[in-house]
Length: 320
Image (cartoon, rainbow, N blue to C red; front, side, top):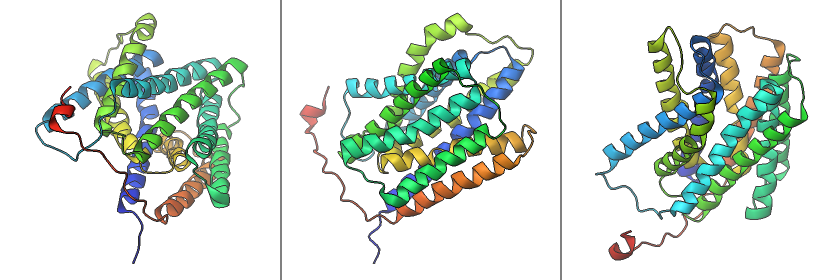
C-alpha cells in the first residue's frame, strides 16, 4: 500500500500551473508595451490592483460557504508576506532596467533556488540529497542556456545587485510560505494572495504615478483586455496556486518547479510572438524540464507526513 500524500501531488500540480501562468505574463506585457506607452512599474501596479479586485470578488462570492478550519495568520504576518512579494516584484524590474532582461532574469531566478536551498536547510532542516542537488544545478544550467544562449545582455553591478535583492525577496516569500505550512498556520491561500497584492498596490502606487499611471493608446479595448488577463491569470490565479503549493512542498523543490516560468515564456515567444526557435532555447528547455521532472518524481515519492495539529478556537476567541 502506498503512503504517499495525495495532497503533495495536488500541490505539485498547482505549482506547475502557477509557473506556466507566470510565463504568460511576459508575453502579455510585451503586447501591452507595443499597444500603449504603459511602463513596467505602472503595469505592475495595475497587475496588483486588478488582481486585488478579482480576489475580493472571489472571496465575497465564497464568503457564505464555510471551508475547512484554518489558523488565521495575524495581520502583521500577512503584511510581511506582502512586503516580500512587493520587494520581489519591484527589485526585479529595477534589475531589468539597469542590466537588461536576460541578465536580470538569470540572476534573479538563478539565485533564488540557491538562497532557498540554503535557507531551507538552515532554518527548517530540509535536505535535498545528492539527486536534488544535481537537479538544482541542472535547472540553473538550463536557465542560463535558455536565457543567455543568444549572447545578449550586459552585466552591470547595479542591476546584478537589484536582481539579488529580488531573489532574496522571492526566497523569503517561499520559505515563509513553507514554514507557515509546516505549522498549519498558512491560512487561506486566497486571503494571503489578496493581502500580498494589496500591499503591492499601495507600495507601487507612488512609483507608478511618477512613471505614468494611465496608458495612452489608440487601441484601448486591447489594452484593457490584456490588463484584465494579467490581473486574473498570472496574478490572482497563479499566486493563489503558488501559496497553496508552497505550503506543502519542500522549499527548494518549489523554487526549481517555478523555473517552468521561463520555459512557458519561451514557448509563447516562439509560438505566438513569432520569435526564432534556436538551439539554445531547445537545449535550455530540455535541461530545465528534465531537472523539474526529476524533482517532481522525487517529491511525489516522499512518504506522506502527518498533518500538523491545528488548535481550534472557541467562538469567543475567534471574534476579532
